[in-house]
Length: 428
Image 1 (cartoon, rainbow, N blue to C red):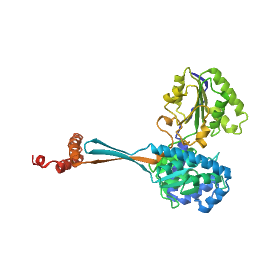
Image 2: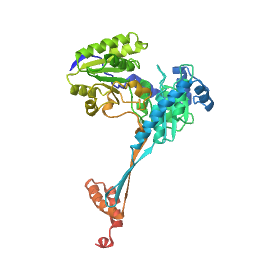
Image 3: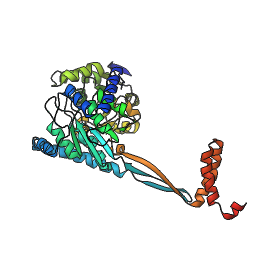
Image 4: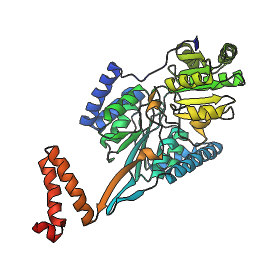
């Protein structure tokens, strides 16, 4: 393995200063409620509306400002997300099995009752995030979904975002950003019942707020700056690979950009092409920083080593521009979402194709996947037994409990032995 360009891989870090700021804010928001919400909204977003929750008429007015083509395109994207979530749900079957005579065990997939969805704004109004959290929750059977999205500073809502949130199925829409938005949903402010799960990406303050609120409610995952890794062999198109790498680099100066190739010649041609495209890229002020600080290019000696390097990086998005895609598909284990072949690209997954774009970053793909319909379901077990099965199980249970010196546990088994033992056995 040769390191052709050595940037730094971004990892999720708990910044002490950010953690302290968020902790103080959450304490104030829980103590002071909507007064603190309004104070922080004025401070950070120059936003102080009569009400943060949009009325039905305000929602209609916002949607009326969205071009008809954008409404149709959003419908296209949401139909794809909904269809894929529905097919995912079909794979999640209830279970009931009789493991021994009279011992019946099972599980059910039960939706959580309420979800809070955060749709980020910031540098880009990423209204596509609305369907990525709201639609899977609705398909899962979640009864209530609240959504918050930050205002354009001092200007109110972004109409396309409101359209996407409404069409995805949110019950309540708040124009509110950052830590106050998460606090409103988690604590149940402004008359809103507290949610059970918080979902959605955001900046480092949003991520830290989710981390601190976990336990108070569930969260989808902790997401840091976005990442793309491309594995490319010498049959790939350097211009297309460079284009896709820059497509993610424009997100954030801290975006992770990694290329694993199989020859130094391909590495040189692709980096030259990337620099050429970067010189005319409209968002080069952001993408150039990501490439400079976090761009990494490896030259692997074999396909096996390329797969090993990729799994070590554990990227959020992984593209395969290779002839032997079946080898990599079978071998790779650590990624958020996989894009197979030059025909697909990360932008499809981010915006339109139907898979979810809320994905693990910072090597979290080693232990979790991204948001999907199952994130909003609890797999809960149950058991039922016949008296004869209870008797047999109680005898083993009593002995196990006595070995552990858990006498009250043992008594619960003993009373069932006495209740279900045959009359002759009781006399003995």
